[in-house]
Image (cartoon, rainbow, N blue to C red; front, side):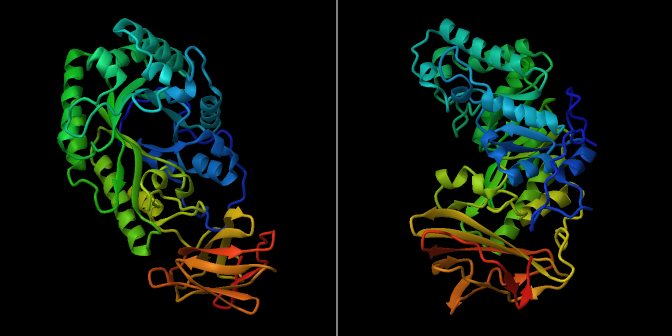
Length: 464
């Protein structure tokens, strides 16, 4: 069992506040399947998720974040431009909301981030401060933020993304003004503000052994030798399907050999979209590889995935044509990656037949209007096999609401005969094993209102 340091009594406890929300069709696990957080607790591991506070208004999003994870990370609310957009004017609303959420659900909070060249307000980036002035600005920001959450945040990404790809230090206002010692100074300031907090340096493209991770390793070795309060390194792990570094475990091990904790802090594994079933299975195998690399090293403290579901991932905005990178899809339904994590943590890795299926039926459908304008809309549909037998070649039928016409479709062949619309699986998703699901979409025109069909049939059988 891992023996990572913990100081907050709330961490890894069962939720104090259970979210009493009925599980929808395609929910992540049956009642007998333990959530990821319970499996991670057995190993003493962090099983974390990045959360945007405003998305907690979505009940399904909040339910997954509370039910599945023993740790949460602010996706943006603790970054400098969010928490101190103007000098001396702090905005705590978003950050406080997630801390309150974590406290209510017995979760740890991983603080992200204190000193970073990006999402930095212009008053800092372009302030023209002298070295002593910038140190004063840093000290005020770090001490104020860390002190506020000293009872709630156990780990901090103190410095984020300090390196270029060749292992040299990134150009930033901090490095230009203070030199590389700005990193040690930041760690010392955070330690002074909360001596109990675990302090990390975090970066991307440092998952395997390469020039960039070598630069990070040299810095970490130097800081440890100097007695600077560095307790760990974060490997962001924004990866691509099929490209998990083969040296990831060895890289984790060499940092652990320095006496540092290593955490996978921002895991997502992207692919081209829409992802085929083969791509999703390859993605699941890559999630397994990451967990295996972490769990093989005693110094690895756990894994945080960067987002609750594909619908809210940062990737499509930054890498057009790529995405589908998280363990939950656009409808917050589990993907093979979820069950890969489940199995890696000691679960059975079996999605089973789904939650509370209708004993007289064998399928469940989620029908979502994801976008709407004037006389058009985009519909996303997930059909799940809740029966005990494999469906080889599925056909989902429904009666089209009045005034709607299908104009295009993806991940299924969608046709209309009279008032009946039929969607049929394509080569990569035509087979639905027990508990399996397929997601497809289509675009419609409508006459001022987008109504939802009253009923669905899968191969002639009524669905929930």
